[in-house]
Length: 143
Image (cartoon, rainbow, N blue to C red; front, top):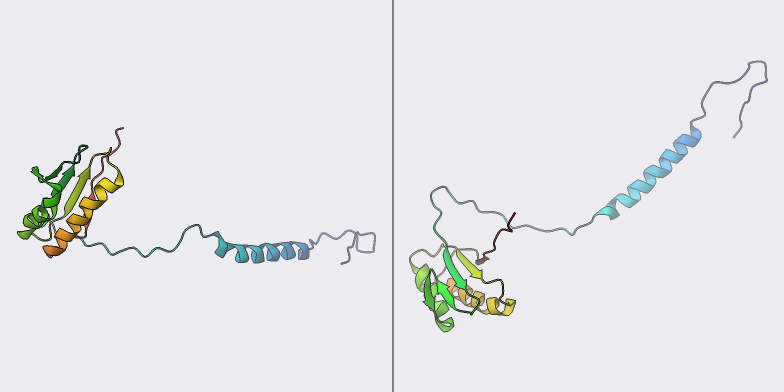
């Protein structure tokens, strides 16, 4: 690459040589094109489709509560652990699409909540429930 510093008959040249600039820009473009696909930070997730409830069609959920002493209530009525599935099936007979919400005390271990959750799912299957499984109730953090 030659450079004209002037001194000739025409004097100093005011033209800018853009060849190095184009070389640098092309190298950067190639680097960004090669690196961009690797910048993804998450995995592809196929989310389920949401089903919207028509206004006025929402029903009160069936609330199953497990206390810190592992006592079980179905809509406020005390139920023994062995009779949980039967109580949920009876409660879902009139409205099988009713949502089931499981409220467990924060002091319970996951194993204390998992077995009742399985019994509730079995009861939903026995009642031919169209509800999407069991919802776990949580509390909002205090401001």
